Length: 66
Image (cartoon, rainbow, N blue to C red; front, side):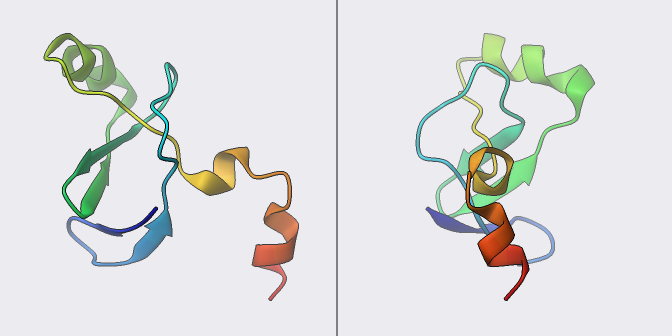
């Protein structure tokens, strides 16, 4: 899903599926990167974290070389 960063407004592809080692918190149509030291606290509060698609994409080079 293409979402906007909550501060910069830059769009990024974020994985739909939650990830145990994710670092992206999605709120509506916005996302933010959660610092490593805050991730466990966020998860304990019942939120799920996701990954940026570029972290998992097997074809990332095709996107970066355009």
